[in-house]
Image (cartoon, rainbow, N blue to C red; front, side):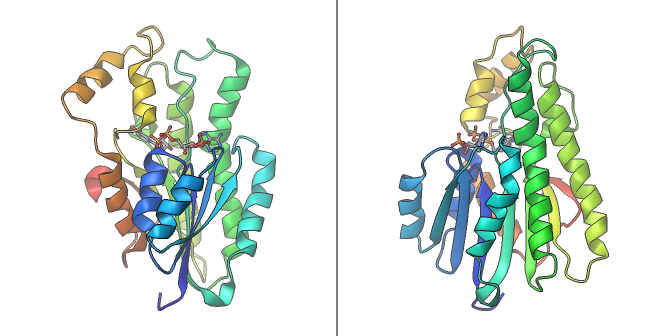
Length: 254
Ligand SMILES: NC(=O)c1ccc[n+]([C@@H]2O[C@H](COP(=O)([O-])OP(=O)(O)OC[C@H]3O[C@@H](n4cnc5c(N)ncnc54)[C@H](OP(=O)(O)O)[C@@H]3O)[C@@H](O)[C@H]2O)c1
């Protein structure tokens, strides 16, 4: 990657796992492009103190018609001749609504599908369209979940969107093998980690999520992973020489 800058786009960087990942990647020579709905001014100061350059994009990713413009605007800030590495981490996600399919309002289910499935695929599509022929290392991470391979009562939309993301990775993985300048893409399941998402799971009613007690017990027994620690391991994988392109991997693998 020589002395050229690393440009890394992270969605859902305002808190939780995305924020922890940004903290681990922040250093001199790295430019972070962070996307979320919230204001990230405080985070920017922390990342700049570590030597990174940062740009923020306040965007609701459920407005999927705006995502092509979003990536195009970010790309305009990435000078081809000064860039040695390009990354896209599709991390933003939501579990809500938790409860059996058909129970809650149409609009909340639509948002779940847009944020967990439509947005990461469209952002990746735009990334491929813009950078396919750029002859540098280019990598995408889709943040998946153990729920992609296991049905949880009450999580029909979350489980199926994450399963769809995994299949997208496997499919684009084989397509990219044929490319002259491949984009390497993988999916990563971080396991249960200490973020607001786990907190909202623990406060769900048993009617909507019958396994809630299992999640409460795991938390009490210290079996929920440390988000910052898992993010540190993933940051190393993103920048390592070997990258598991086309694969769906878990926190246990790295
Ligand atoms: N926590 C776990 O145990 C766990 C386990 C397996 C997989 N995961 C996955 O890990 C990823 C990160 O989860 P987390 O636990 O860090 O969740 P979190 O603490 O709830 O953070 C979610 C992030 O996504 C952003 N986001 C949510 N809706 C958005 C929208 N409509 N537009 C733009 N950004 C949006 C939020 O930012 P704003 O609110 O500022 O928009 C926030 O930065 C998710 O993909 C999740 O499915 C988590």
